[in-house]
Length: 127
Image (tube, rainbow, N blue to C red; front, side, top):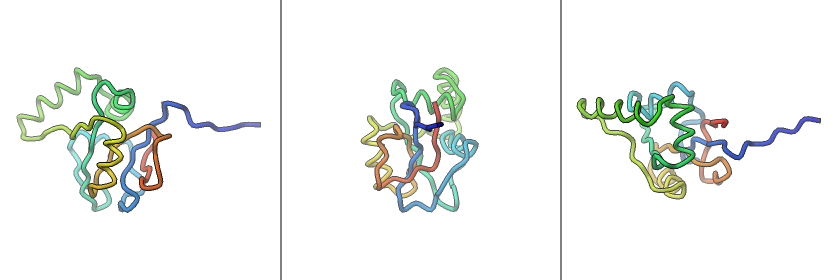
């Protein structure tokens, strides 16, 4: 018999349950977080990050952005000269959940086990 269990390190990309966005591709997610794409399904999106030392941020950065800290810092230094700032960094997964629930179009990522009924999972990062 085969059982499927969610890995303890799985990360859920979430938006509010009222969002028009039902799912997002890895390619579009990367573009949203690199501030190349600003709309998904006609909905303006506002990406939020966790702090750089957060384990889920490290998983997100490695699996979705495919960049290490140095590469990402170089990217944002370059984008700064074009007037583009990186996504807002929130202090905790609880802060991400509250922000995503309150701000229309906000998307963030948290431990899959912390998702509640007011959030909608639009992508799962398997670790």
